[in-house]
Amino acid sequence: MKASDGRVHIVRASDVIANATAQACRQAGLSEVCQELLGFDGAAIFFQAAPQLEGATFGDSVLAYEESCVIGIRAADGQTDLNPPMDTVFGPDDEVIAISQDEDKVIFTGIRDEPRPRSRQNHTSPSTRSASSWSAGTPSDPRCSQSSTPSCRAVRPRMSWSMTSSSRSVSWPSSSSRASPRSSSVRGDMDQLSTLLEKDRPAYDHVIILGYRNVMTPEEADARTFLTLLLLHEARLDNRAGRIVAEVLDPRDVELAHATGANDFIVSDGLSSSMIAQLTENPEVDAVFADLFDAAGSAIGVKPAHWYVRDENPVPFAQIVAAARARGEVAVGYRSAGPTGTTAVLRMNPAKSEAISLRSDDRVVVVGPPE
Image (cartoon, rainbow, N blue to C red; front, side, top):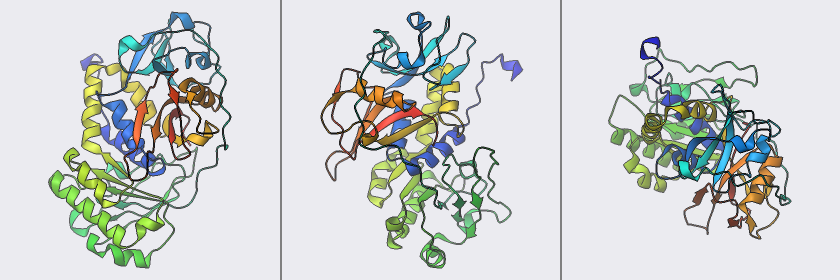
């Protein structure tokens, strides 16, 4: 890319979609958070000079901006570091990386201390049971070739004979930091799914359904995805699996998708378009996206509220930020489950002084180390 003089950015949207899908299996509402950060309607990521923080720590900075959430540091040499250790010291000309409604809202309001509320339960270890994926995409699809879900130990994609080549196989990158998932594949038409399930009935933790690409229209691909969801429901797999996440190609099909029984949806073309638009507007956020959506970097988490608060009494969001800081995370929002049968409400980047009441089934959105 030397001829472009650094003006051309390679966008690996498929990598973002792959990691967002894998993470969405284990965290309810994560796809909505991704769309919020990548879209233009809500909170976005900005860089801002922070001379007031020189000599202060990153832990100090997370409470020093009333209307923005500091998630990292960009050093004077341009290197970005998301959620560094809380004792990391700001140097001369370092900048904050912040989530905010607008660039002019990233305003330093002073270093402060805040007592953190006592939580009701400590962090528990993630599950290490098997995971399974019903793939409507080809087995060589990059969306199937990696996982950012460390508890994934076995993956068994299933795909239609007529849509995939028999010469293709699933490949998984090796990793020194965690065990790579075992992989195998089973071929057969999707209308035989119930029969396949009767022959192979492990306790699946997660199910991922990917849409076919390049062999049919997005509308036809989504129709097959919805049919697969209905077949899974008929086979009662939706009662045995922890979460079912489906890819939707056409954003217009999202409302219809909610009636099919999946727990979450990745609108892949929508995420890709939003990411490209963001990079067109501000190419500097490329390094931040690469870190957030890389399996080895910092990660967006949607964690149980009781890890951060003891009861449902209202507390300033600053206290939730303080509780997350004690866990080595940065709180950037929350997701309220709402009454049974209603749609959950995502609130990103609330003001530090905003009083928030979180119930046991609500979630706190954080940026932290991957699980």
